[in-house]
Amino acid sequence: MQTPMRPPLRMIDLAADRDPGFQTEVAHESGQLLESCYQCGNCTAGCVYTLDYDFPVHQVMRLVQLGLREQALSCRSVWLCATCQACTTRCPNNIDVARVMDVLRHMARRAGFAPEASVKTFTDSFLASVAKHGRVFEAGLAAVFALKGGKPLQDAGLGLPMLTRGKLSLTPHEPGGHGKAEVAAIFSRFHRFAVQGASAHSPDATPCGCKTEDKG
Ligand code: SF4
Ligand code: SF4
Image (tube, rainbow, N blue to C red; front, side, top):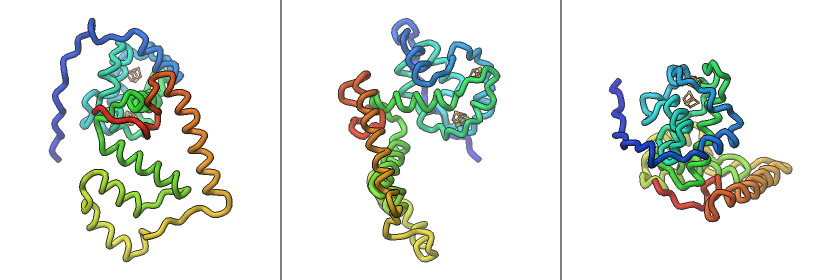
């Protein structure tokens, strides 16, 4: 299998790029003792996506420690992270590294960065589908994702066999009873808290990214 090429990294100017408050912000949101990372690289050694990352996960940790806000929030790695927790289980200092990656992804959304646009498009489409139907409507999600990605026929070859074998439905199966209303209430609570949290950082951004314009 061919190893994917890493995109070129831009030069870091420590003196100009450093934001001394960034580590504290990430530590506060993640609840992790970030300064205890001593760069052993155990997290990266267990990360399945290292070959696709622009910064391996231990370097993402270092970006945070150095206060390199823009580099950390604009990197592809936080969007490609699968939240598999391998890094967390391997850290000798008990840092929940996957949680840190998750927090960085939320911060990136609020700051308007989405270098992996298709990941953000899929996540947004998935959440919109769950919010609308109370659970994901797979056929609708696939169609919306394909259209938003500008590739309307990308999964057409898979869709037809799945439909004929009953693996995909053309209509949503919404939860019965109070299920749909309960899911809607979760989204409503999230948006309420998200807007409160986001307004502390930026007046026109929300952590879910639903009302922001992407920069990347
Ligand atoms: S949680 Fe993310 S960063 Fe950690 S090992 Fe899994 S893919 Fe890599
Ligand atoms: S495993 Fe833990 S201590 Fe080692 S580099 Fe990763 S985060 Fe830092």
